[in-house]
Amino acid sequence: MFMSLRSTWPSGVSRFAARIGRGGSVHPSRWQASVSIAAKIEPLCKVLSITPSTYHAHVARRLDPSKCSAPAPRDEVLRPETESVFAENFEVYGARKVWRQMMREGVDDARCTVERLMQGMVLAGSWTAYDRLCVDDHG
Image (cartoon, rainbow, N blue to C red; front, side):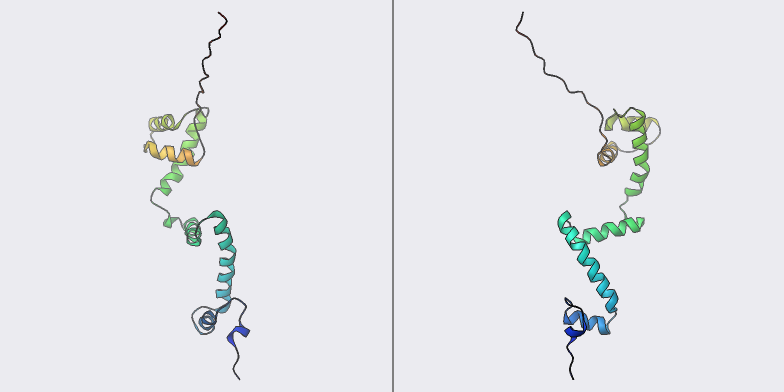
């Protein structure tokens, strides 16, 4: 008696996937777990408007630091240094002055790197808003 593959597998699993799971290299429970994880990630990715592969690449970089870009380790060293220089100077220094102070302290890196790190940490120097000069007509 012939038994339908669809009747033995959970709903949503195609006949092709059922064949692979039944006699192939992927165990059915492991395949089903990966499908359920993907079902949880895809709606999140739609809300964030990123692709699932971007999400998985980000998770892989967090789990294995060797997969990060070349500047990432240096950025991790510079972030606390940049933040401490910014805090030591009453949080009024902008990127250029923070960069100059870091050079005085012996931390030599590009100004654009300091700007990028400060922007990523949402650090901004203070600035003066000039009031409009108004002249009264009383005299």
